[in-house]
Picture (cartoon, rainbow, N blue to C red):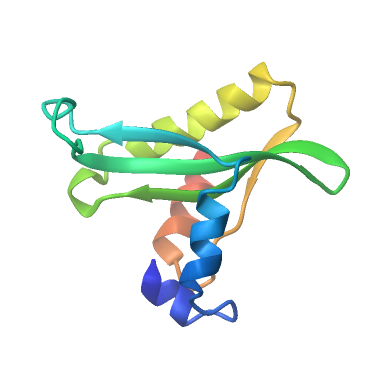
Length: 116
């Protein structure tokens, strides 16, 4: 992701990214390798960071990050995490799930297009 940020109009701003991720409104769903939950820290293979936000006058679940490690890709984790975001949104009365994708991240764009 670092390369995508550096090559974007946003640029890489680690302090800003840290503030975004540790903001009190940020929520996480974390997937770890099944045989490592007792490790300290466990082997995290995927996560999503989201917030309940308002966009275009609608209450939404806004996905700020969804990352899956190379070794865990094409196993359904990304789809599972996006479904969980949708489920959480429905539970809390959100109107939709939203996100932003870097234009250069064609694999992510293809993925999000495939899951709707």
